[in-house]
Structure formats: structure tokens, C-alpha cells
Image (cartoon, rainbow, N blue to C red):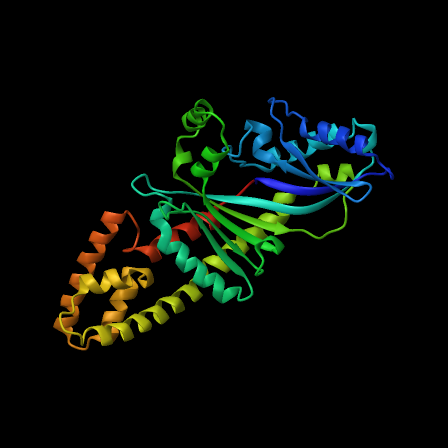
Length: 344
């Protein structure tokens, strides 16, 4: 559990700018028993409503490096928030509209790899998403100088900001580093959470449309129990559907085989050059191995080719620290990680 967005509809009409400023100051300065602020008033809606973001991890640690693991933690955050707003006259009796829920899944990257190492996997996920959400959008945000991806966003609408369901995959360490003002705090995070450098954050978001809650009903509403299964399915179905992945592997193998049939007829053909020229579409060694099986009839020639491409792809993988030999197995591993995730 990470963040929710709510609309607070007040019982008072005709509130002044000064009223809203006072409310904003109060909301933004609600402190948990641990001494951290965890609420942000984000906007004013009309004459008597405001938008608020609540961060569950920040309640306990002041940062989302903290991972929520139990429903009890969620209820504590909601309960504390509800108690706080009932202390302010202008907020008493407000109605709460739940507008968005963000739930993250954390995959720990092996220490010999990094976020960029999974680039081929992000590409496969994008192809699955393109097949499942044809009217959706797939965006990658990368560092310009290194060309290394830092954030990938998969939405169910062409305009990402208009999404109903969204999955964002990002390098949590880079994200936290950008938001942390001083080196000392960052080192404290790493000391407390040594796995932070290896976290791939897969954050699923859903916009909510439902009837409003009273303050007491919101306090006791099981957000995780209601939306975790739905958001888990959003990731598994739209990015990690292995029926679609198997079809993609076969389609890509057929297309590579067609290219191989043309290139092998050229004078001076060799597999190292072929791999370098086509590396952007070689998502997995297994795809290329299948392509060789389609393109080459002679058993000995095929076996020799398989040996050559395996050697060249291994070299490419090691030199660039990018997964290309066992992409399918790594995708399975991420899927299992998400399937097993629970907040109990």
C-alpha cells in the first residue's frame, strides 16, 4: 500500500480563500505519532471540496522507502487521519470520496544486475500491453545522456493522465535519490533499508468511482482487501499474461527467421554482425534460437549456428549487463513475486 487520493466534501458552503488556506495548513501539517507528515492538500474543488493525498508509508517513516505489510498499518493511518480532521470545525461531518488507489509491488533485483538490465523484459511487457490494451499508452522516461530507462508507464488510455488503470515501473532508488535533499538522509535510508538500491517498484494505480463515505465509515473501510486483488490482476493480465507472451515469442521468431533467410544469402554473413544489427528486436535468446530452427533445415548447420549465437549473446549480455539469455524465466519470476504478494 502506498498512496490514496480522496476528495473531502465539506458541510460548509461559501468558504473564503482564508478558510481554504487554514485548512491547507492544517492538512499539510498533520503529524503521525512518529513525527512525520503524511497528508498533502493538492487542490480546491469548487466552493466546498478539496483534494488530498494520503501516504501510508510516510505515516510510519516519512518516506515511501518504508513498505506497508499489514492491514493493521492501513487502518491505523486511516483512523489517525479521521480523528485529526474531526478536530477542526470546518471539517467535521465531511464526506470522503475515494478517488484513486496506488498499490506497489516490490521486486528485488539481484545485486549483479541493475534496473537497466531488465530492458528486454520491459519491451516484452509493452508488447503484451499493446495486445491487451490496444487503445492504451506505453511510455518510457530515460536519462538523456546514458539513454537508460528510469520509469516506464503503461496506461489504458492514449493520454496517460486520463487513465483508469495504470502501471508504473521505476527504479525506486533513483526516485528516492531525486526526492531526497541531502546525502545524510539518503545514507540513513540505505542503512535502514539495504535492499533499496535493488528495488524495482511496480506500482499499480486505479481511479475509483463510488459513493462517498462518512468519516467513520472511511476509518473502517478495507481499501487493501477491496482493491489489492484488482490491481494485482491489472499487472498480471496486462503485462505478464503468458498466453500472450508465448504468442509474441513465436511471432518474433518467425519475423527473425524471415530476416535470417535474407541475410544468410549475403556475402560475408556472420552471426555476430547479425546480432548487433538486430539486437533491438532480439528480446530473448530463446526467440533467436527458434528463428534458427525455422530458417535452417540442416541439423549440423543449425546446431553450429545456435552455438555461435549463444556465445555472441552471452558476450553482449555480459558487456552491457543486460538480460537477454533467460528473459522468459525472469518474467516468470516477476509474475510469481506479484502473485505471492499479500498485505494481511
